[in-house]
Amino acid sequence: MKKIVTRFLAGLGAILVLAISLQLFAPNAVHAVVSTLVTVANTGANPVITQAADNHARTAVALQCLAIGNTGNEETGCALTTGQTSTPFEVPAGQRLVIEYINGTLSIPVGSTPSSVEVAGIYAGSGSGYFPPRESVMVPTQVGYDPQGTIAYAFSAPVTVYIDPYYTLQGICALSATPGQGQMSCSFSVYGHLENIS
Image 1: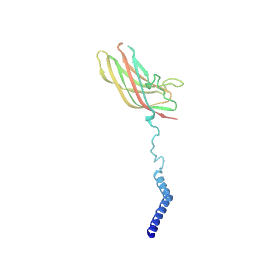
Image 2 (image 1 turned 90 degrees about the vertical axis):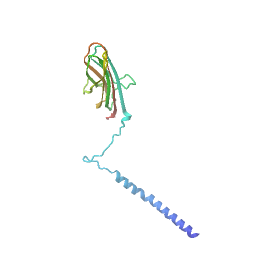
Image 3 (image 1 turned 60 degrees about the horizontal axis):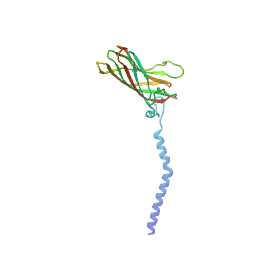
Image 4 (image 1 turned 30 degrees about the horizontal axis):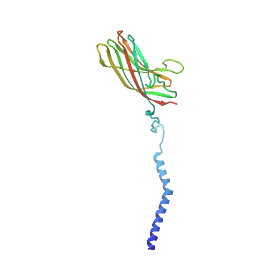
């Protein structure tokens, strides 16, 4: 019986010594292997591939507006808002708006022809004017026709337009001619995200 107990204790002691040895020496070996795996060389000829820390979904922007022109008007426009308020959306300080998609509709009187449909950036900070110009011109496609009154158009396109801080956006539609009767209307939806620039 003593031999069995002695062998059992010797085996238990060996296991204990092995466990202590692994505890003392294994972490250094593991750290060395991990360190070797994540070491990278960042040179001009061999740059490291990185991913932006910004999550666009957290800074998503969706803007919209509807413009209705009076009878006889050849141009109408509207300020793009978030839809939560009628205040025009202004790109915040320290950020840039990246527009990724624009779509909308245009309804004009029969006998008229659309001359331009665009989303324009207007500087709202100190100073004034359109400089530098920020605009995206769209091409409308006819999608409907009512001989008694209106022609319907639609437009949509993926874009990449950068809008700097303190700019607001305006949707503008214009006709080359109008017969003097009927209303012109256009709606705009703009989708994109904000990114930090400071």
